[in-house]
Length: 504
Image (cartoon, rainbow, N blue to C red; front, side, top):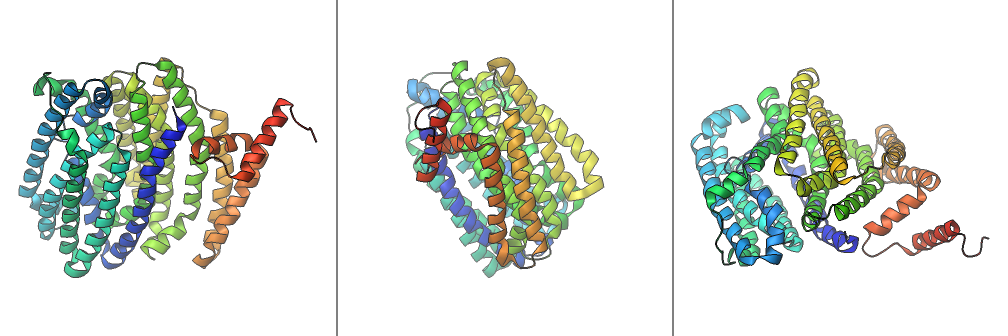
């Protein structure tokens, strides 16, 4: 894999996401301070239903697009046009039917998910928003298949900025109904923007090819998997809403906020890896080299970053969400660990996706879902919200292990267990330093100094135990190259290793 191009695409996606997530934190702070804990549950419910909109009638077509369309766009435009035309027709009709269905059963949904039939009007607005969100999702997969990451970044930035401005404006002027209306309008505008960027793909002339029915039959393994994936991503919200109630839903929503922000790195990295590996799906040697190098890079760079966030999480929740959400800290930390496992597993799971039959990934997702359901049944009655978070961590770990086993057998991929252990220990020492400072110092104004102290601990330990690996990872991850001092240090270390240059 060409790391310079991949890193540039990653920065295209994440730079916009970072800016919009910061903007989103402002809205998050307003929502947690204005809405009651029970009303706050509407926000995750909106996300649950809009995400479900492209699952029930999606028939597994979105993964089929990602798996097949990148190569067709390069080698066979008529077949690409045929695939685009059929999938968009099916998805457009199916998601519209879903929205209509939700609109007509709004009352029982409101009673079950929000605890009162008085919220039925919010569910009806959500039904409209789910259609707009699902239509935008169609365009999103087309842009992803065409590797137009700059356009995806723009759409995401516009959607996040609109969610903040329209959501906050609607809440302050019209209460929770105004908030719901603002979210719907934002999803409609984001769909229009995504449609503008993907219109040339939608205009590709379709050639002769398979029928709609045959395409759906071929996508059936992915269709079954889409329910399991939805259960993995949104099942915890359904469990909290139906078993623990709207108040717990509000606390869990706060707990998920910062781990969800980490998801932007997972998703951005996932898109780039999938597109790159899909173009090399028949070259197992290239797949193995790319996956090995990517995993080593993530072990060195991603682990300390997420551990730092875990150490700062009590302060972050208090500053952004306000006081009264201390119960969200522990599940939030566990969810951060879950996201770390997810990002480490991206090269492994996508390697399985492009090199193995569809049923292989379905089996892995089934195993992951089985671990999730079993953990939820055992842990939620015992420890409530932390049990939900721990269940997601266990399920993610099961998925990562299964993906590694499959890819190791098919492509001889390796995992740097020793480097992972060292990186985890050094990062845990940093996180413990930061967490101790955050919990013992009353004023949040000293948090930057606490973070700096933890960073110094990490850098000193890294200098002692894995300086070469860390500098090599940074050299590959930074498109602009290493800063001057680090570059000179790396060159001196290499000369010393090869025995060249002045030994003094």
